Length: 476
Image 1 (tube, one colour):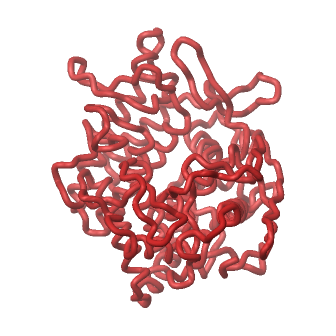
Image 2 (cartoon, one colour; image 1 turned 90 degrees about the horizontal axis):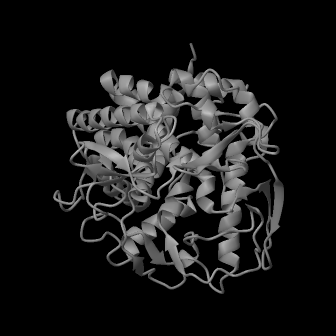
Image 3 (cartoon, rainbow, N blue to C red; image 1 turned 120 degrees about the vertical axis):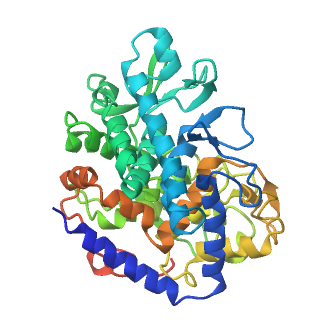
């Protein structure tokens, strides 16, 4: 039995002690933003209980999306946020458990139908080999969810759903845990693993299209491929965790920013170079506790370096600083220089709107003290300084103008996975709650120990030991 529970308790106590002694406005603003976002998991808008997010047990991409439609990614991040909503006092434990049980029952049903689908019609309706479509719509006549026509059966969205359900299952236990295990173990991961295509051996497929078959591979580093590899190893004893871990490409790149104050960033390239590939996994997995993998690679440091390289890139390509020189906010659909296949970093990004969730997603890469963490300060600045940052429903807006003072709202769309990710990311930064739930899972511990021989690594200051890997908790 791992002694991880004692380690997690130590870290949580230490983190909460830090929070309890820090009464500045930055902390208060982070809590306010987190609690606003956690309402998505609780099922309705902060300011209007009639604006609901849950449909027949799972979560919509937006409360304003098509009737009956749900989104796996929004459901995954929201189920991960649900225990935090209970702990924050937004809903009661019985209310949270009821939501989690409805979701778990529905997910088990959907995965079971996908796993047993053989005919073309059933695959088009339910999914393939236990994996699910990215989007489903409720069929009232059949009293079930069916995959949206034209939508892919998605390995990453199914994986995000499983991690979110894992967090709720560990917290609520009982039938929620039982349904999670039944759903997770019904996915046929081996069928989604390419074992024959030259150059793609032992890589998981990205998607499946009814009528045409598999599409793409998880063949370059992203935190998504780490999530998939570990979940597959947790779920299926037929998966060789070490072999699939070593199957995807690791391409070391270097980005040197222009003067003034040029900086150099060396790390493993992320596929397409989109910043969210550096923090999606961090929502569920505390990479700080993993230590080096069996090849000596520190993935927390890789993510932090890549994230900060994006900060530098987006800041230097503009003529004036982002967010009043505190930090930046990532552009939508942007590609930075730390990318494979490598984009052209000399091409300027013309957009000036910036996503809020991408700032929250990187909090753990910066200082543990809210008053020294530039991302925390930026979020506080938006909460206090951007008019109508919280829209009429009480959730934060999607994007703001990054390049002008005041950072006016530029897009008020509600995207559930982004809203819930904000809640998860801030709660992990303040308490480590969501990551702890995953770390305590016995199957996760077994899968991780194969690949990370020093797991669990105990850290005392919120970051890896500087003398061990050269990491500093100060701002770059």
